[in-house]
Image 1 (cartoon, rainbow, N blue to C red):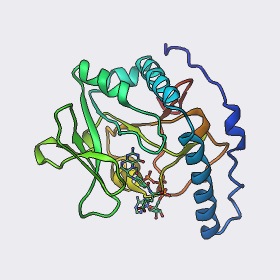
Image 2: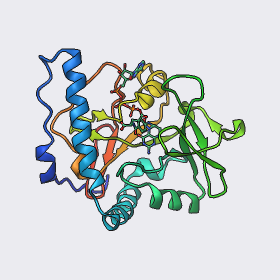
Image 3: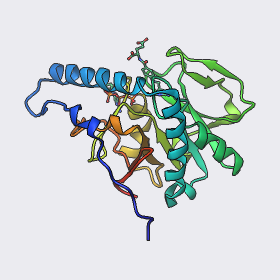
Length: 226
Ligand SMILES: Nc1nc2c(c(=O)[nH]1)N(C=O)[C@@H](CNc1ccc(C(=O)N[C@@H](CCC(=O)O)C(=O)O)cc1)CN2
Ligand SMILES: Nc1ncnc2c1ncn2[C@@H]1O[C@H](COP(=O)(O)OP(=O)(O)OP(=O)(O)O)[C@@H](O)[C@H]1O
């Protein structure tokens, strides 16, 4: 039996409507996604540092209740940016329990590709072109995405169907296309991490989108395939 999950729909999410997308041209869809990103990013950036620290600790408690998290050994996380839900408490706990932690690194040549590099307290870091810290590339610390057990993904928006809206770079979708959409087995589980204010009613599903297996927020967990 899985532990009971708490489902609560945030009232702040009610304002996060995306106009029904069936009749939109691709340019209109792009504009609608852009506007939604701006709105949600503004909301999450307004969360206080106190709120963010509490949320990071609550996130860890929820994850600890999930068997698919506890049974994972090679786990990709991210360093929070732009008001994203922080993985800092999760990272500390993973290191304490001897799990292998990986961070996304922008591929220096391949457009829209990420690499996953093992990360600990001593890993030399640098800033990428978006101002996000990432490990310096070291071949011996690279893990191919298909070898990860679990990818904890940053996102801008999510819906109740497991659709994900990212920052718009297409990095996760492109990197995971071969691994997730083209039938690599076993493939890593993909769980989005977000604040409740990032929930939207419905997101357009694009052919390249990687579906989320779960979404974990500081107050509730949505499980789609786990
Ligand atoms: N914390 C974190 N790390 C991550 C991601 C993420 O979403 N969050 N990524 C997930 O893909 C990758 C980086 N992708 C990103 C894509 C766009 C922007 C961004 O700030 N874009 C600016 C425009 C910047 C520019 O063009 O110079 C913006 O939209 O305002 C940031 C990260 C890898 N690392
Ligand atoms: N598998 C893929 N192969 C080629 N291009 C892709 C793929 N996935 C996404 N893209 C391109 O990336 C662009 C951005 O995609 P999208 O708006 O879904 O990004 P996102 O999910 O918000 O970003 P991210 O995955 O970095 O968080 C799209 O215009 C699309 O053309």
